Length: 368
Image (cartoon, rainbow, N blue to C red; front, top):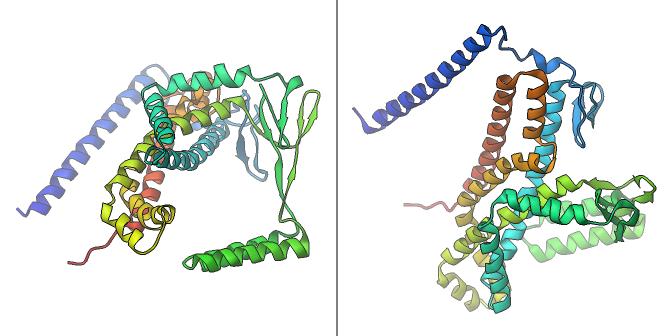
């Protein structure tokens, strides 16, 4: 038998055994539920939820995205939890990557203070549990802020125990010039000086002819809350900050290892071409380091997405937290947990697909 055919048969056999085991467990669970007079059904998803969420949007036919109400269904409650999870996960991926790259650069810096701070950050964060860090962010920091009556005001934002209220961003009449400048930048991105010039020219023309492209609408402080603005609740902020700070420590080590893996000759070649240290790193070393870092970065991104389920510890209504409420009220633990597992699996597979697609685009292609 050919080795390739043999490997395919073995993989198919293992996959079949795993599928058979899962189906057997599901059949056993359904039989035990039927013996107790509980039919296995997802019809409960259409029932009224009867509970509220501290924050979150859901979808309603004919209305689009809107706040979740107690009169909505269990399915809409789970959707609101999923959107909350997705919001934290996507923001966390971007912010933790930027912070991790910054810390990695600090650890490789020639400045001894930057190296010491980077090393201390990584060792302190990686060696303490994430759950403990979330408690510190929520109970020891965010809930110790001033009450709403004494909210701190800076840059048009308001900070208090109720969270952070940011100014709303609106589009001005000069936004068209900014859009044209961004389009020109995208088309000319391979010629960076020309692309930056086109972006600046579009921004200036839009500003002169139509005014500022963007403007801020600061929130108005009232007796019982803010009018306008974008509210970041303490629960959302604690979960987001905790995930970003924790994951960035691991991402920093991934980037540091990738940068060190770039051959020293690449630095020397960049210097020979007349590039300075910062330009050599940005144009020569970093693009090669990214190719090395992408596969292990996928693991950290998947960990961040799954760690969002710890939001239940600080009262954030993420998908897992909403599942607990739905399961307790409806008595449909098995059906609900199967849905939650499918959603987390789909989210993880989506992240893996995006990272692998990017990895294939930036991977070097060798000719033999």
